[in-house]
Length: 382
Image 1 (cartoon, rainbow, N blue to C red):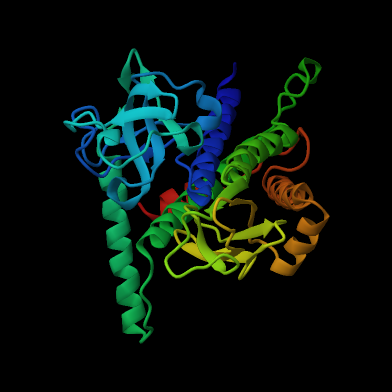
Image 2: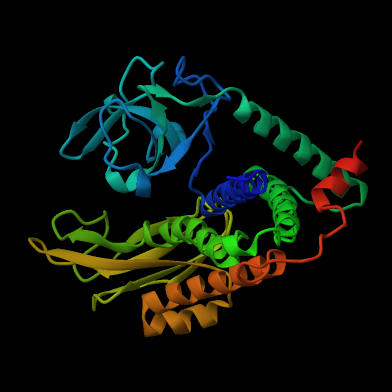
């Protein structure tokens, strides 16, 4: 392998890593990088330590001893938690922080089911691959950036209280996007080098179609997981022998249905039920990043000795188009709406890669003399 080919490969891998991390941030799934914010996993992971997070979709079966990232129900009020699997039950996995005296399930936390596991910490020879201090660095950068934004907005008289989670993801995404632009610019410069010394050896240039395909896979896999994994059919049961106080048979029983969005892009959550005696007060929930929204399901109370089972279907779509357009596609079929999203992303990726790298694998006779963006930036900050 030539030095130029090795450099091209390094740049491609760097770009792909950046895209994966950004996609994970936008989808609310730790991809490649996660970090802990408490001492519960000490000494394996100290506060602020990072780790390599392998998405659940590709991490394989979970075994006792694995360190997993899962969506907690009760721990710390819910949200993602990183703990070790210490056992299994028919209901799910038993988990525990290495530094905690008791299992999570000794409290109110239910066993962790497969669908609640979002990633597994990479281990080598039984040891978690630890990245010391990266979480502390990210947190410090976020706080400094937040203070800077608040200072600027206050100076110009704008009353704005940004959400910490949103700002964190925003700054990380901007920083990684800038890195992506720099690396892609280097990649484009590399692809424009003279490759005419031995034409009989074939074209050793970088094929933009493969770059586009890899980018598409790395973006669309976590994105589709964020739409499909939480979706599905939920069941609500109303028992005629256990009605709320003051509710008579034939009256109305209300159940709240809450949809959460752990990502950084607003989700459109579509709710529906075909039960003739049940209806939602609203069937479309626009859930901003890091927030939740609730719809109320009203069901006719059954008579004593009877039970009403209501099936509720939930579908999720990134709100990247007008809700009316998404709903038209959803009315045709949910897969049509998801397919339209994938086509939109594929088209955007193809356009971006085509603009940065070009189409296909090319030989350029003339060497490009202009300095790349990364070189110009390094010169600027010298």
